[in-house]
Length: 176
Ligand SMILES: Nc1nc2c([nH]c(=O)n2[C@@H]2O[C@H](COP(=O)(O)OP(=O)(O)OP(=O)(O)O)[C@@H](O)[C@H]2O)c(=O)[nH]1
Image (tube, rainbow, N blue to C red; front, side, top):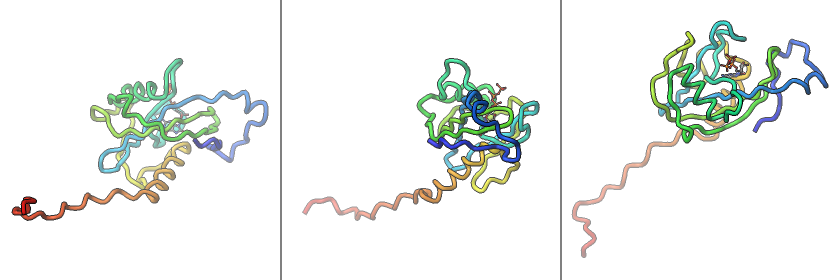
């Protein structure tokens, strides 16, 4: 887990000490949907929300009593019409982000399986991306994830295709 706070807008004065301590972090479930070819889904924030038009991974705030997986499945169904099974949701990393409008704790989960095709139910745009991403601007709280994915790709390059099995002659029956 990454426990350091990311300050989304370093230009703005920071709330300090007591004020900061009183600011309750809002938990947010975020899905990194990864296709078999390694591309991942980014969507834009709908108009009317803070940072409208910025690119992010789909997700949203936890409702009372929800787990991260439940919230993610609900949000991706509401926003994109996808069906996610709990077993396909892999919690990955967390990041606290201090925005002027809220302090958020982002719970990033990797998802490799879902049912349905993404439908933009909130008028968002969407794009399947690989690194480096070709869309902009990206939400401040989303940028670290792209860096983590990049680091991971450097550490673990995509697996090489399986080697062809050695040719076995048809008369190699094992009988002597
Ligand atoms: N979905 C999502 N939210 C992110 C990401 N990065 C990031 O900083 N956030 C922040 O997490 C918060 C998510 O809140 P939201 O407004 O999208 O959640 P929601 O869909 O439940 O909204 P609502 O209930 O207010 O309509 C926002 O403050 C957003 O800026 C990301 O990659 N994906």
